[in-house]
Amino acid sequence: MKLTINDIAKLCNVSTGTVNRALHNKPGISEKTKAKILDIVKELDYRPDYYARTLASGKTDTIGIILPNVENEFFAMLFSEVEKICWEYGYLMNLALSNDDADKEEKYILSFIDRKVDGLILFPVNNDATYVKKAIQNDISTVIVLNDLEDVDTNVVKVDEYNAVSKTVQYLIDIGHKRIAYINGYFHYSPRYNSYINDQRYQAFKDTMVLNHIMYEKENYMEATPHLNDEINRIMLKNIVCRENKPTAMVCLQDRIALWVMMELEKMGLKVPDDISIAGFDNINELNYVKPLLTTTQMPTKEIAHTAVSILVDDISNNRCGNKKVVLETRFIERDSCRRI
Image (cartoon, rainbow, N blue to C red):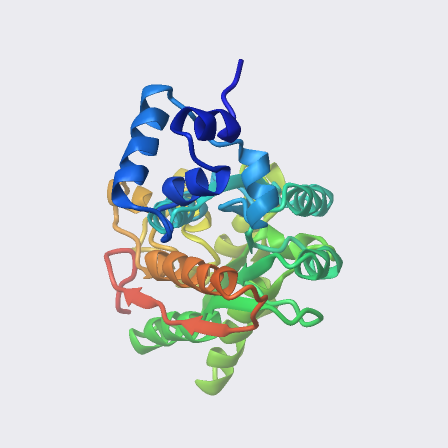
């Protein structure tokens, strides 16, 4: 039979309130009495009833996080950092994967509301803020990461996507490239997706070309499907690089797309950077095992995690749903996949 706080109180000949003060290191109890209670708790391996404690405190000491996936190394690294920081603050993590499915994301948000998580970290799949608003209406502190929802007033932690890509394009122009292709990702593939990141990066690419008086050719644009190994992606890439005036450089939305491009170019007999220069985005660990080393942009993964969790913990401690807006900077990393022409 499971022990209750009443059983511990009877064994120690004290009230349940005194036991509770001992368990939570609260004032109003002598050191001698607290030591006696804790010794019995340890001896009998007593564990407080989680649901009763939650009902009394109104807190579950849990934070929910919904990621698009963990196949993308960036999200796996980010979750690892978030989990470490949450643990340091005394919170346990509940992880859910939307797999870029808006319906799954909505169900997970509702599930976290039902489970009464204290905070929520979210990477929105689409632009519908309905379920995010429901979380806030249920007093769940929320942080939107790497995206922005116009119709909801909540905490946002993102990076300066526009400036990051602008730096990459300007670098390529400065080393002599004028015919530059842009390889976009699949988030843009459905009107249901929140394409904030894609839109910011692609707009930066086009604007930087214009600022340098370089005409951007639509033939040098490709929008990859969700599965990079789809034959349609190979056909689109081949159409770009096999033209007479093929691009001398490519900017890719993500490192994983850049690595796929490098692999496909090798199959076509094209060398990086001798024939085409390539630049990515994220600086994932996999780049350490690929030659040539990829020129890329370092995402501030640890800073994103620390900022998001710190905002949540502050909100939870003060019983509020805040609306802080934090924009973090990236770092451009020049490596071997780009050459001067």
